[in-house]
Image (cartoon, rainbow, N blue to C red; front, side, top):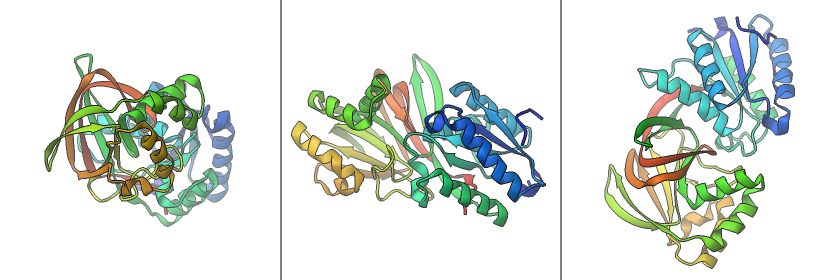
Length: 313
């Protein structure tokens, strides 16, 4: 194991890039433990550890190690995974990543890997090691988010969820207060007013007076919330969940159903399956990208099908 800088899966050095503050500040310990297991299983395949200093540094590390020919493993939360993949996709001209990438969940939510039956760091470790041994990987989609921010054009990529409206408002409050998502929900809903959005998709143009718009590549968000039960990470489409509940009490009653996915049966919750979507928003609208907050003045979202490989059995 090295904590230093130095296609064929078995011939490439692996770089484990991780957020040391993840896993309730146990990131350093978890990375070290994984590296020890790796060295026991694959003593002839080097693995190097790279702790990130901040979000931008995580992206920089991901890109530099990928360009240096190393195979990557990201450790952190869904937002951390998104930061690493965004750095790679933004630098890729082909819009497809050649080498499989491993993911180790050590964040607060760890939603994305739940689609594959993984709900713990230990299960993820086992499945990743097994995949490498058997040379297995899964070809997956991701979402591309193009937006304007203070007149500048920007692009981010997401593997789990993109959202605005009540969902992003709740997430922002939870981050600011350093409190639970549930408490932030209870504080935000009594003050909530639905907003009007004019959505252009590859199927139609329509106006919605919605509580939020959640665009999902995978099923879960916020940990165990099954926001989009119908979502499939490799179907070449994204799924938008759009609640249009006008009564605050009814909205409060709806939120617990997100954990079971039963909210989707409500007549006030709409579902759109699409490849492309765009719409205008007011300047500096808060948006959530895989749990991380950003702002946008205009939104364009599209699926990037079969664009990356997940190192997973």
